[in-house]
Structure formats: structure tokens, C-alpha cells
Image (cartoon, rainbow, N blue to C red; front, side):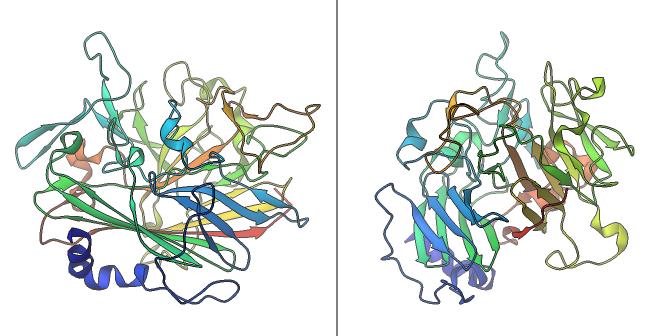
Length: 413
């Protein structure tokens, strides 16, 4: 009953994401709860150019199939072959999930609302003084990406998941009810995340934690994604962090030509490897990226996030697949899979069968995570003035995140 009541309460906020829409191709305008998962536990949606599979665990995307520039089908997101394995895998790399109720890191696993301090579940960077962890990552040990959502609507081109997060779960105040809708049309994957604080003021920040390899891990020239070209035209600044990636409060300039400069022009993710400036860029003893860039579109005046330019572009000249990310969020995290160590196997829909090339695993730097989100750990940086974007209360506006991933072919990079 709680899900139905909150659906009604959200009203027009939820209408655009639960009403099925006909986009042509193989899409359908008939919403149905009878579309069952396949034998592997995947719920499929389809458009003219895309086929995407999702699972209730973490409301995760498990497969995204698209033809490359030469007509060869590629599965361009990391995951597992069976939905049941997501709950079994001990590494839990957040494959394709929705982290919540607060994505990214929370300093010292604490925050304050209206003078009241809250301590949430610590789960990262354990120390002698803090054996459970020095901070909280993606909502704690039982964050949203460790839990099964409920499928509340499913059509040929759309699926909606819901979750009820109880008061006190992982130490967060108040109950939160959330709905996540994924839709495909033409060559586009859209998603919308809505969350409602029902009982107390609470922080909310969500994202999509999808691992991308636009070559489908099938490039016979490299098994990394360092050949992918990345471009963020509105991101001349980034959030300064310490050696465990906790924001310091500083907003740093990405000087043209520096390792974190992806705004002055497109460049390959691997272009700055070998530059000493990149050592430690993603934390202690880490070379690569796990960086939150700001998205400063407002500098050019009013804008419509749907039409007035992508916030990020990822492209592979090898497959010719390009994705332009449009979003209403004001930050963007890119992670270059520095922590992958070859222990994660590829799906059967990915990679090369010929062992002459590369083993069928995800190597270090074998993928790219792109997270649309707000400024990370802003709940501990009140001077940033982000509280209206991250603290929500009963009777107030809901949290809303919207994004559109628009695919095309481009063989130049």
C-alpha cells in the first residue's frame, strides 16, 4: 500500500516516468506487469537501436546491446551473466546499480541537519581507529545497490523500479520512497530517478553506476578503455579531495593541458598516463581518475538540459560507438576503473574467444564509470550552498535526477 500511496502523492512528478510512451521501433505504449524476466532473471526493454536488460537488485542495468559502426552487436556495459550472481559476488563493484540513499562518499560517516548530528554506516578505508571504515561510500554496507527493488511497471520500452528505505536504515534519518524509470527510444537510453522524504529531513543524492566499455571488451588491439576519448565542455573545475577522495572544500581549476583538463577539447582517457601529475590523482598510490568535475552550464545563461548541449561525451574510434550524456545534474564523476585487477570475468556476450589476444577478464583501466550527480559530500560543505539540492523534507519537493544517454556512430577520435 505504501508504494501505491506514494505514487499518488507524487502526482505530476511521476507521471512522465510511469506513463508508457510509444517511440516507434519495437517500443510499445502498453504498460504491463506481466512481462516476465527471462531465464537469466533479466527484464528486457527495446527500441529501434538498443536492447537493454535490467534486474531488481540495485535497479541495475545488466546488458546494453547496440550495433557498432560496422553492424556488429556489442554489449557495452559490465555485469554478470545471471541476475542471481549479483547478490553472491563478494567484490560488489556496484555494476550498473543505483547507489543510495546518498551516492559517493560521506566524510567521517557523519553529517548535520538543523543542528542534529547523524552517524551513518561506515564501509570504506578501515583504520585502527575506525575498523569499520573512515567514511561511507554509496550509502553503507546495505546501501540501495545491495537491495532488491520492486518492479512496479514494465512495458516493451520502459521499466520502473521502486524502493522503500526505512527510517534509520544505515543510520539515515527518515523514510524515503523512490522510483527509478528506464526508457529506451530510437538510439537513446533515458532515466529518471524520483525520491520522496516522507517522515524526516534527510540527505538524498542518487546516480547511475554503470561500467562502460564501448568496444564490448572485444578490441583486439587493447583490452583497456584508455583508447576511449572523453570530453566535458562545461567542466573547467573539479572538487578537490584528500588521499582517500574525501572533498577538502576546495574547488580547483582544471588548467588547459593539465591531466584533469577534458573541457578545452576531447582527449583520450589514457593521454596523460606517464605524466607524474596523474600519480595520486585518484587517491593514495593510485594513478588515473576517480574525479568529480563541476558542470558549469549556467555561465552561458539559461539552458534546457535536454537540448542545450551534452555534459559529457565518450567515444571509441575502434567500435565507432559514441555516447553523449545529457543531464540536469551539476556535477559529473568519471572513474577509470583503477581498482579492477583482472578478477572479474567478462559476460559471455563480451570479449574475444581467441585467447591469442587477451584473457576474458576486466583488467585495470578496462572500463569507465560515468556518474551524473550533484556535488559530492556537499552535506559536509555548507559553504557550497547545495543544501536545497541535497536535503529533502516531508511536504517539500521531491528529489529528481534526469539523464539521457544518446548513442551514435563516429569513427574519428
